[in-house]
Amino acid sequence: MKKYFLLLFCFAAIKVHAQNTNFFGAVQIEYEKTLSVQQLMKQVDPEWFEQSKDHMPVDLKSYFTFTGDSTHSIFYQSKEAVIPNGTWFRPIADENVVYNDYPTNRTITKKPVFEETFLVDDSMLNIKWKITNDTRNIAGFECRKAVGIIFDTIAVFAFYTDEIMISGGPEGIHGLPGMILGLGIPRIHTTWFATKVEVSGFKMNKVVPETKGKKSLTRHEGLQYMPGQRQISFRNSKRHGGGRQSRDQRHTRDLHQRPTAHRGAAIRRHSEDRRR
Image (cartoon, rainbow, N blue to C red):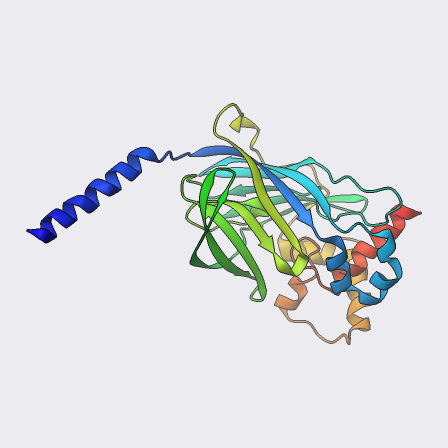
């Protein structure tokens, strides 16, 4: 009899919780992106960092918008970072526009690279997630923490809520049983956290992939084709020992996905060009 009443009590508690919880199938979210500039540059090029740190901001904040539902979404910059006067650093990849089609596992990203714009059309990232018991409230939603791995070696952490029934997040990151409201990639000293979540008053008909770009490429083809990026990679591979690269190592040249010494060279070149 005691087991019967205990089971009844548990079902009643679950029902009350469900009645008091709202679930949303479409949202528009504002994210604040924080890039720790000096920590990043100290990691990717210590020598240049020591020479230039007095002309670098400590960090930069910019803002992005995610609009989507369980079938598709778009993520783009809504307010660019304010660059302090007298500093050299300029962010890379902030102008990317990421469109995800969840049922087909397809992503289309518009990537401005120096003076050209490319469309990268490929499958969505394969992320291996492990859900933890840690929780955090973000923008009024109770979120659970998960730790993931992309490209076999890059660790990410995310806080997601199952109250928003979208398996999406910033920068095309996806694959959790709910919407990612907080994201961090320690390797690039960057975080994204939701500051505002809207569940009505926005237009889903604007959630469409970008079509204007020099060429439609896969992620791997894009790394081989994009001008400047190949030169940066080649120069730095010689600087760091060179040698034949595996397919996974070649993926490290993606400025947006994996910041290594190659990305440091790109940031340095981009910043110095802007300075001139």
